[in-house]
Length: 234
Image (cartoon, rainbow, N blue to C red):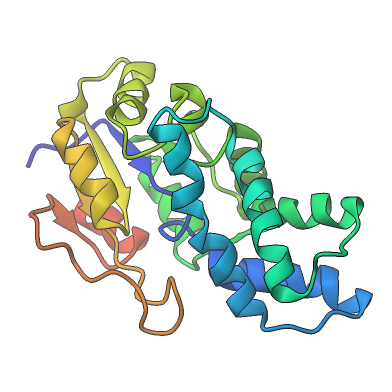
């Protein structure tokens, strides 16, 4: 495999731990207001609405909306299930911003710092630009650009999202690599001509509940971003 010039990163699950972070943020906001619930179950339920919420847009049934808007719609769907139907608007709005306060996995920031010595780096995420910028500031992620759904006007795994990222840097797809913990993301990127890197996150959905290494071939498998830097000679 020839070395890429740019590395594109899936964010939710690959670079940041959404599950523990959303559970923590929900608890810190709602517990002082007298709510007691299974915070990890709440995080899982909210995340479970993620793909269905984007599918309406991918299929053309609904116009493009930034992920902050989709997350808020999804939040409204799950609140009644957790006895939170009476939550006031200010608290709902603040809770929706929990997605802007996710923590990176321990290897993410140092791994990105190393990789940036040699490659252009950008998130190619379904998250919107302000969300990506807030996660970067919180976790000291240094990007060369913020690419992905809001730039493309569509959601992964639609080809436009991957191809617009390559175009933004002026590179051919074969000079770019998609880095993700999810087989579907990598399969779609590969179909667009990108190189693919699988980073297992075995605890993404809870202890031992992450995706296994994909059956379909990927160009590199590395246990984390520091190992990826080793593999790419940085």
